[in-house]
Length: 177
Image (cartoon, rainbow, N blue to C red; front, side):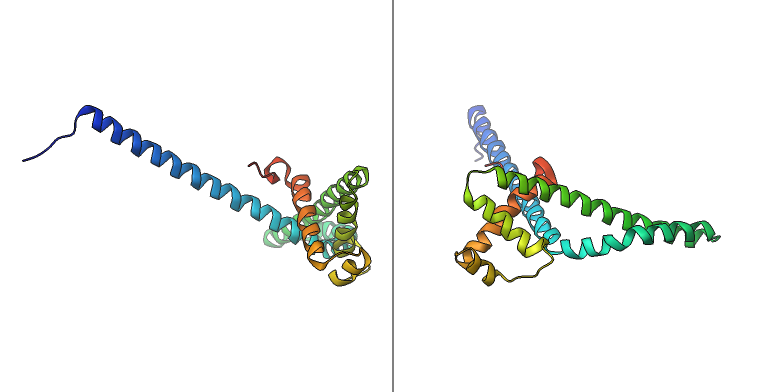
């Protein structure tokens, strides 16, 4: 004996299935956005970690780019020209990236200096000391200098990187909750 569902029961099942599917899709979307934000935060930290290297590399690039342009004029083989052009574009992107990061850091410094919160100023000083300054230092020395715990240094770096992520990646760096 087969039982069939009434129209009302079928509608209720369909509504429940649609609701469950929409909730699942929304949760997946939120997971993807979180992963994207986490990547931006990670990328901001990587940019800061390698900032000194980028700056040192970019200082030699201007002269090198001129030499590459001259060499590309002398090249007669298409494959070699392509390789020279690829190197040139990569080096130009490095220069542009260094300038872009510097503008973001300058903006962050100005924001911190205008802030009435003393921890904002401290955060910039910590980021500057750890990643930008030519004088290398350790987290322990910074904690001692600022009379704070080492864990506070890590928290300050994370807070600064969240703000810098917005300055570097724009609205995509913001976490909406």
